[in-house]
Length: 549
Length: 60
Image 1 (cartoon, rainbow over the protein chains, first blue to last red):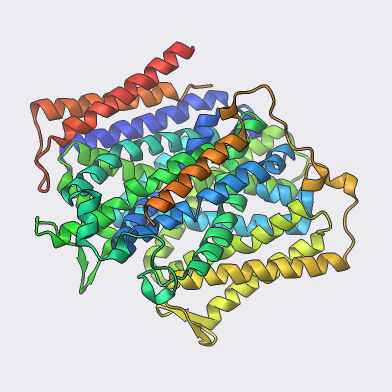
Image 2 (image 1 turned 90 degrees about the vertical axis):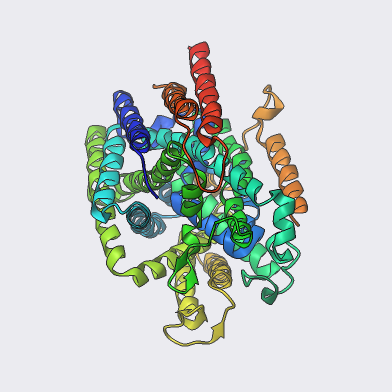
């Protein structure tokens, strides 16, 4: 890919705006709450788009178009089954507890509902996870720019880290959220033309259908057994593993996304945040997956496009950038590259800000220095930004040298939220659940996940202790590990809770379903109420699944 | 607090103007398409930027 001066100009303009937003927001940061939780003052359209964009990193764009070329339209399940239902659930049923409890973070909610040790376990796991994710995101950015543009790994990692550091240091969470929204618009306006051009060149959807095997253009038809589809999953594994445990675990308990909704300016806005985000989420496959499928068709059509190779095998991760290089002239090429860099950077910033909040409130304020004046915690929050960014850079270099460790860690992070989902569901909907139960269940669920990974093999991954079972794909392995982790955490939490003393009901008001008055929305128009919006989302979701069945 | 629509509006207006300028005066070439990609992509950006600026102004 060759860039012209105008492409660099566009990139520079973007950096200018990002830093400018951080600088302007510095004025509105007066307390640790402003810095770490946006002072609960962000309008709903911004929190909704940030809720979506915090998860929409460049790895996702590149990975999803790669999966599109590899697995076809089945990849859309990661959005339609693997995200939207969970987003509805967190908005309707869980946000009243998160927002209403006045907790400042997910670990803090665990402290309010259960006890100190459950919070500690979650806070520490989460802090480690965010640093690694942000490091991996930087690593992927450095690698991509090196491969596509020949830039130096160190220069791209340090430059992007410096920019992220400056704008989060200045404006805190609000700055990260604002820039996520800008990035979201950039992705939509910068990548939609690519999807349109690639699909049109491939002959539209009917052209794609006529040139590819049936399994690539149908999302449900080939799911009755794992051997029928390239993903190697069956309908049960897909719906229970991905659609329930993995996706509910991620969207309902991961503080990175929940934090965006918790920054909203009212309870109603917090509940509508994931619901409104579900609309663009449903449409995302058309921007990120269709180009991958179209690339597969173009490669068959003899129009001058070949699938990128790495040695003897296809390098699907390069599908997106090769399409961009061949469809975009300079100008739009700069926009496309800027959108990619923007999403890498906001992925980093999202992790850094979530790490900040959890470190400052759940670790520093709880275990290191209690009862200091608020100005002290604001300072700690700012310093944590620097430390967090530094740790991420270090992780990026570790990843560069030890590729396999990163693969394993990403696999582990893939299902770390699954047992947590059981803890939350029991905690929120069964008042008998105790702190001891939650802690033991969480520890068991996580150990079961690690153990299953060590005992099963898929695509030569896992099976360090023994090889008891072979999965047809790592995806199937991941789905079933999550399922087992969820079930074991659920069972152990229930059993231990029955043998330990529950907290008195008056302590659990606002934390458990049966002891909480749900917010009644009266006197507002229907589109401002959660339930009708959710019904609309469900109708559209069913229509999409039916259309691409 | 800063109204996000203002910087968003300016950013996309500027991008739109640059792309339209390129599309009109120095259309670039891409190997897989003969369309004037910069022109057709720049136009929606300029419109989007304009709408954002309009909304920001009319609210304040």
